[in-house]
Length: 135
Image (cartoon, rainbow, N blue to C red; front, top):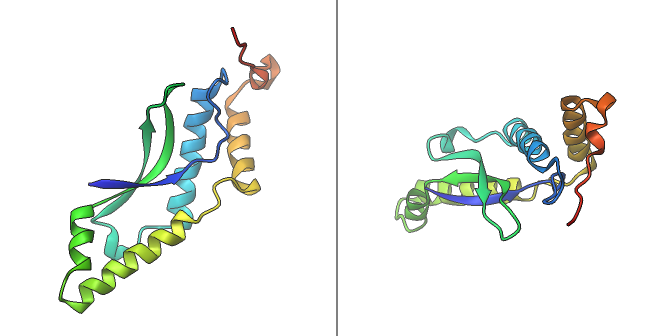
């Protein structure tokens, strides 16, 4: 299996004291978004799935939504002499281009993530106002 990065929204920012909580909520909302708006076509259900993947960075780990896929199988379709298999290859990459172009930073998605985050914190205690202090 290999993966293709679909991205993140950017709501959770490294250095924010609530980064991990925000990141978890952001990833949940984005996964739901992909499942609801770009369901995996039936012919690909056995070779692909959406997931959250953690990446390492000098400033800290971060997460993005990825599409895991059976690269060996998909690559084999490209060179197939069977026309129906090359059609499936083309369909896979056409479908991926559609999901890859999703605007994950749209106002609508950002508002969904913010609303989910604010529902998860105790506003009366000012948890939504947490600030990271640089040392």
